[in-house]
Length: 106
Image (cartoon, rainbow, N blue to C red; front, side):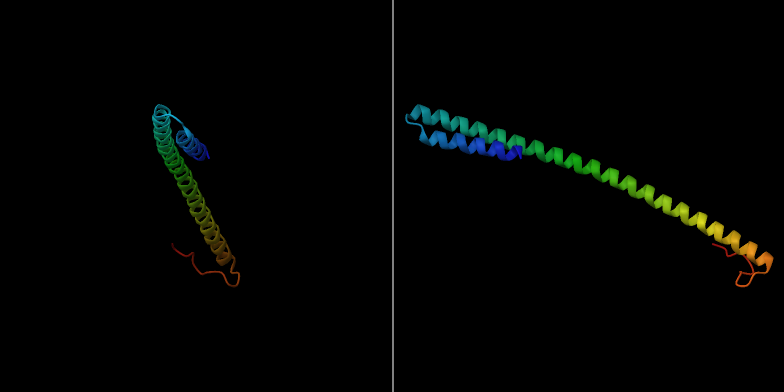
């Protein structure tokens, strides 16, 4: 949004320069318009750098969160496999129907 404001300021300066009456006023208006254009370019470059830095930081946060989620899923799956194995061993020891004769190996 600030880039739009700077661009409008540069366009306004250029329009005012065209409306200037004397050659000296026109030259000064041209200098002002060029300075405004330079400022616009610098602001756009700065905004681009800030966006890039923000995107990189957001990517790192997302990556960290995804890694934690994957670790939690892996841990949870391991715990569930251990619990299932213990339940199967217990059921087999009690002779319950459907129980595995021996605990599965992973």
